[in-house]
Length: 111
Length: 118
Image (tube, rainbow over all chains, first blue to last red):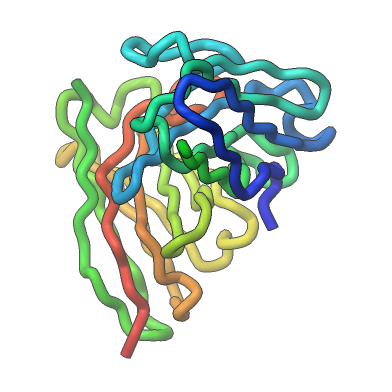
């Protein structure tokens, strides 16, 4: 059982927009901690995609964006491309864990 | 460009100790960053194990705290993980990672699969 809740899977056609939700609680996102997002391509390590709720590291396309409201956050991907097919994880700090905590991950399928 | 590389045995016997090292290049473990271990059971999600600062200060996930120790070797620019009394449930890909602002992870090792099996 992950501290942060994500849908197991989402899908979309090339060019479409998809969103991935991340639901937390008052001990993590709701406590004001930042949310980060990672992209994990098959067989590779996670890659930081969004940090600090809505900031993109250098090299990440602006097709990826993040938002946060209350105890939840979302990752939006516009102009879907085949190369976006991957697992996506949200992460925040959790008071009960006393450290970083991850969502269970969402598998994005590009139809 | 910071690079991290995990090393250690790929197989550990049940009730044994899992020991891994993360070598850091292109940066120093004595920088103002925390260094973490994260694991991922095959086909499952990510779990934070714990973190260490260059002073030796550590924080561990409560779910593993009784079985984990971490250490840092400034002279070798590396940090290490020991997980004791392992079971099959500890079979996972183990990643080391660098923490930056707000507990995010900007650099990751490639990961190493550790299988607990006799």
